[in-house]
Length: 421
Image 1 (cartoon, rainbow, N blue to C red):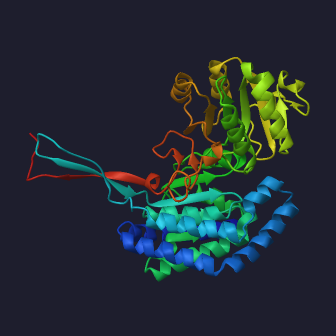
Image 2 (tube, rainbow, N blue to C red; image 1 turned 120 degrees about the horizontal axis):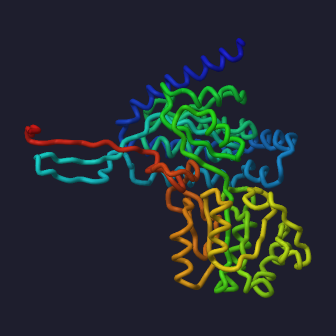
Image 3 (cartoon, rainbow, N blue to C red; image 1 turned 45 degrees about the vertical axis):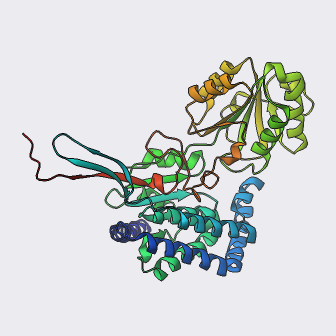
């Protein structure tokens, strides 16, 4: 009982401090936020050897826990990946500050002049698994948008995230901003997550970033509004008019570049006219690249294809596995995606403009792609510097959630003494 009380007290204290910091951040200058992010980037690079050492402890923890090779890849940090974290922080720092942006402005016959302007959300709780770089991305993006953030990383990345968080706080302090603007829950105890989900007095939005289990827990138990991030059940449809080179390049990259990320392809849909030609070539290339292809009855005629079961449709593997199915036409592909999609990212490979337009019109995923690898489903690749996650719900933040999506808006109304009759 005392442990539960201690967690409650811990979380209430974190919440109070975050709310106080958010009030100060709401009017912090763009220059100070920029300085804090540059300071954090410099601290991370200076301490890169320490971060790698901490990450090795996390990697050993992950190996002992039995994480797959794809999940261990998500967890691993080396100097190149730390350089990527530093670059992302610098990119976010250089972006335009969204706070105070005028979204719309108009006059009314009554004499009112009305402006709708961007304003911070307040306090954001970010719950994420494995990837320690999310600590930097989430902290930086929330800060850029004038929000305080409470970070709860996965137990696997506990040590790496701890050092990265210290660097973010160094940046805040050096820029004269409150250290409590970016807080990290300093325990692996899952009771802290449940506490965070119900802290309506202090937390304005929860952003979960992880697998089905985590997101399901958040959606079931949260009393705070949630930016939903469901599984990345990503489909690639090879239309009859697919260009052979584009199809081969896109499918192989979409699946094999990094199999553990949410933008990795999980299901390949092949037009029936391609089965004996390009479709077979692509499936064989996947197998040659070390991917287990779980195919429907038609594709099982290809040597090396494993029979698919019903559970393979709508499944996020986050591993070196892909489901594959033959469809009669674009309508068959759309129907399959409607049934099994998680509304994350879906792609069509086609040289037929009408089919591309139909796919874009009738599939309602957060990200739709044409002749492009789904591995580009990433805020950094969208020019956002980084992302806090890919939102798949229907709230205002949808797709990659960058600094701009972490704002709300308010109306500023002025007049020359107008009164209402």
